[in-house]
Image (cartoon, rainbow, N blue to C red):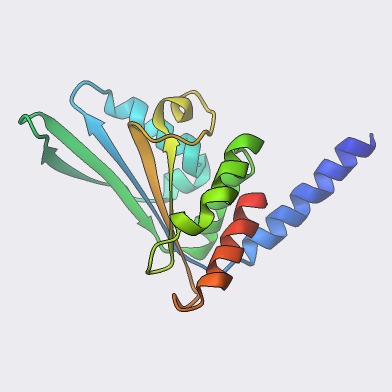
Length: 166
């Protein structure tokens, strides 16, 4: 009973802290290869950003050509709505396993670029199955910017650590 109550209150605290974070935008990008089913990739995106946000966000599609002339579709969205951006982060980091959170915490400084954007990738196949896991190959790319001046790098890194930890 104690553990369930503890988890419930920690989740409430996590939600209230995430809802007050200074998020400017979350950008989501994924490449869909000719051999992939666009519907399945969209389901992966829905599982990552959350069903309610997915229904409200407009994903653009851009036709590209691969190195060997193969067709590729770039699906992307840039979410400026603070509430939607926060929901995306909450959905991802509340479901990310401890090992992946630990890895992100170790790498957070190298994942924040010179403009203060935080970059990470999630496994597209795992997302299709409803699981959230870091990935590097054939993954969904995320870029998150905070409403903190880029010169305040230490503050930016600390806020991203807080986001990761939940």
